[in-house]
Image (cartoon, rainbow, N blue to C red; front, side):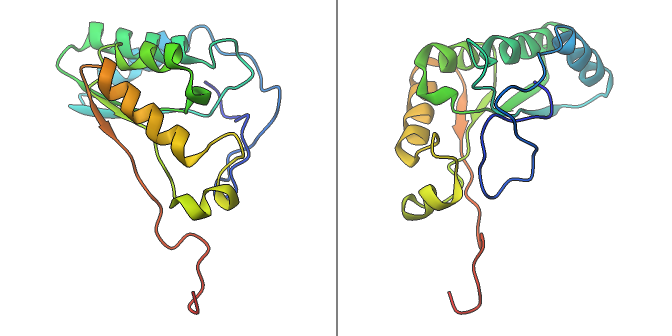
Length: 155
């Protein structure tokens, strides 16, 4: 969904903008073509957040997954997704896309979340995203946490 994120998490070095360039309508086809030719058994798709889009890019992401599964049905696909601001319709679009692993990172512990993540990404929202994806999708759910983020030897 491009290389420009609409969020501003302090741990991330991806460029940000409130109005990134529009989505490439050919991206789902280009990505699925490239990946299906690489001979992979497992792929992890990730993206920037696109809060500027009506569906926050969820249908674009879904289309990539579905095209991949059409071209290579035995390919295991993990998607490291945005939080879609907790919108269940958008989460549902990915969780039911044929995805094998729905991943969304919690990044850090509750107490550090406001200092590390964008204000729109809360600890509880992340947990809700994962719970909902698990409840509606026929896929595994997964999260990750950073260790030693901005820590010093004295703590």
